[in-house]
Image (tube, helix red, strand yellow):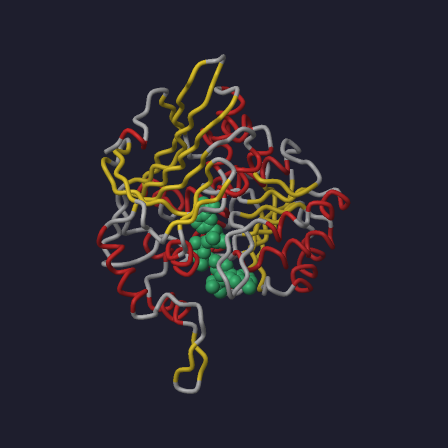
Length: 402
Ligand code: NDP
């Protein structure tokens, strides 16, 4: 059916590559391009021989001209950006110049200030419309599947949605005293930022990790969850009409938070450059270099993730509650594609987003977040491609947990 250029060769990219190769009728040819070509070649070596033809390329995706040149030589139908959020705009510019569809899993981030805002990418709407190409933003799990879950609830279960709580639980254990499950820099930037949620038309800011609850997760058990800001809150607050409140919660163990606090207190999570032995060093970049590579956690991690949305609203004049979630097993994910569940739950939806664009099912000129498309084909694809979802019509609500 088509050709995909996959940019990045980290934990998430590895899953995307495996999943594309499992669907050779859709992904006839792929090119894996990243800063370190050896990582692309290693992936190719692992997966070569199937029906999907694989090429690799060295690419600095910060350089739009390099991306344009690669697109011109490989001629993909879609670019799947699973490098880092810093590259989103340079890759979108290259897609515009060559009129190729675009998919990513994280919003653009300027290098110097963590913002978690869609404004830079939403500013491309008209340009993508005029070029007749689709940009699908945030097609990972959260953002991504959480938006699809919400759109599905809106379509099938509610006349009006009033509140959404997104719950992201990781019950996995990798055995290290401290490690992050995906890119440490992005992960730590996200967690050390202020919390924020949307209520009655306003954004309410809270100090980092200051709002804590406990929740008993299916197949994981009780966990402490903390209110965080997460990028899908911004798009869902805009796209779900009548929404009164949306919050995002993530589990962290006491051990993880103690390590993080110490690192923060000594200045290791800062993105302000410092001078060290005549060289400029960004403490968070240095920390990333000494922490375990998230890709190496795959064989070690045991346990499950449970991510979903508890949604309340009204259907046929009556109050209704709906919980939709996916449980993913770290070891099963590793056995299938050689990556733990965090990468798996991001890479599978990235592949699905690209697949729906290639199939013409989710193709519409412009820049869109996942919840702006018909959720049904995506929900079917989740069940088919390794992330089956479950529903609960009478879940325990966060407000009921003491
Ligand atoms: P990794 O750090 O494992 O991989 C990032 C890859 O991008 C590496 O191969 C890296 O190359 C490559 N890269 C970095 N800069 C450039 C550049 N300038 N040009 C070309 N390649 C580059 O990250 P993950 O795989 O864990 O995460 C990938 C993306 O997925 C991130 O944007 C992350 O925010 C997002 N994500 C989204 C989630 C969701 O649910 N929506 C959840 C988890 C992650 P090198 O090997 O040389 O370092």
